[in-house]
Amino acid sequence: MKKKRFSLIISDIIALALVTLAMGYLHVLTHSDSQTTTTKMSSKHHNVTKQAHSKHQQHPAVDWRAPSETNPYPNLTSVRNLWIKVSIAQQRVFIMDGEQVLYTMLCSTGAKTTPTPTGTFHIQAERGPEFYNKKSKEGAKNYVSFKDHGVYLFHSVPTDKKGNFIASEANELGHTANSHGCVRLSVADSEWFYNSIPEGTKVVIEK
Image 1 (spheres, rainbow, N blue to C red):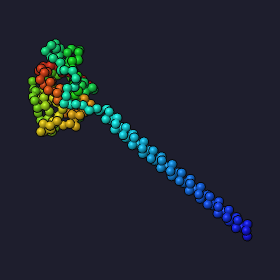
Image 2: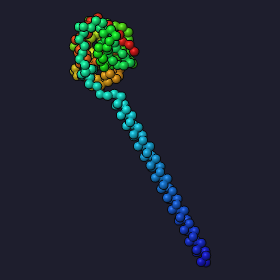
Image 3: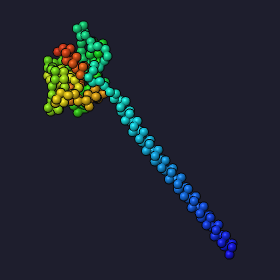
Image 4: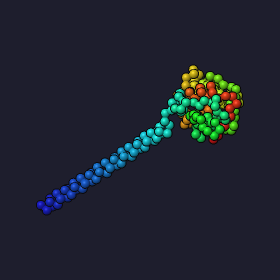
């Protein structure tokens, strides 16, 4: 009788030990899964933050009201072979004297759906201090035509119908081709361009 009771006690102890071990293993397993999930979520958050930071780094802030260079604008009275070069790939306008770059301006050319035409053109007679296009719901200041007599222009970053600059568009200057086909310039650059580049000046626009 005593042996039987002793055997039962031993069996109970072994069963209790097995249950304890099982519960401990389950706790370790659950804790490990929780840590893994937390690590994955933390890593994912870090990657998203890193991507957002990287995107911001690719588009540093531009002072779209100011001249593109700290150097003064060139004096064109002594320039013998003045012409304008526009690089769509670089989103830059170069004021040229023969092969020499006199000044480099940030720009935004036409978006994929409304591209800026490439080729050789000449500055036309049409120019003015401002305009507004009801169809595109955008305007600009200091416009100078280079093709189709008022259709394709050099002008400032865009304005709304009240003449206020559209900052979300202007902030892409020098980075993104997002115009309706014209060549956008900073406010200061467009004013100098409007007042300084004479009619008949050659314009070469290349991809």
